[in-house]
Image (cartoon, rainbow, N blue to C red; front, side):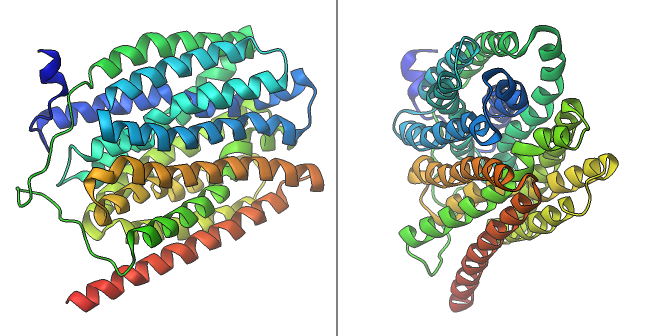
Length: 408
């Protein structure tokens, strides 16, 4: 195949190649999303080695999420203009370099910079940009495809926190980071090169094609509403995801149990994401998102009274099943109500808001812990932000329903 053939959009919506591309994308995301989860696992070890408090130890995670957020917008705009594989190749190299440099850091500042500028930005290519890319390859099963691509992030959350503690115990966190960096380089680059084919164009009226739906909101107002909703849901979501390992250590259960709970949470999130995709294909992204947001808020409440070891495992499972499908629904809504040619940038902006929510929430929970000496107030803070999310999605649901009734 020539260079021209590789860059030319080719037919293939809902084709066998599209499903193969989805499988490759999921594998790429499962490997590359280590950039998000590794810092959570090493948080206690980094805090002990550099001698900082919990809020300062949470800053590398916050920097990672800031870089991740910026990368979702920048890389998202890039794939709208030049396709997926070139931005993905550069991002994969940046991720590997960041992991290697973080392993050599001599201060919390150096570690934080490596996490934010290289690991965070590099990891972004396997989230919003990947979701936007795969959405162009599916019409009939777009919800399933988008949530499956997003599930790679949670597969990583189930896989990496399980194997990292063993390697850290034997060789230390620095060796673990370096080994993961080399692994990412030698696996992600070949996978990216398999995704060089340009996205197909869906002809209007073609079988399975989906017209852009109408809503009684301007594109700018819809974008703002999604940003507010994404910020609120992810400030809430970050509390268990970022601090469950540290929370378990504070309760005397140890790092391994906390890492196991994180893995259970992420594995349940994979199930939730796939189920949400099937549901969104039937009832739409807005309704699916509202259901997930309400369930997440309810599951957060369970963390407050139940802090026994067995009950925390159960609550983590419930939380994962509740929240896993929320973030991909934002991408589905963008594709339902906004033009396909703007998908990369529009989805990137919403994903940036969700990531900022994770970043702010991760730091805020550590700050509240330092002030109060426990995580109870941090859970209540997460619930308050979740209620803001539900309010925004409820307004979006009302506007969509209002438009549908007017057109009936």
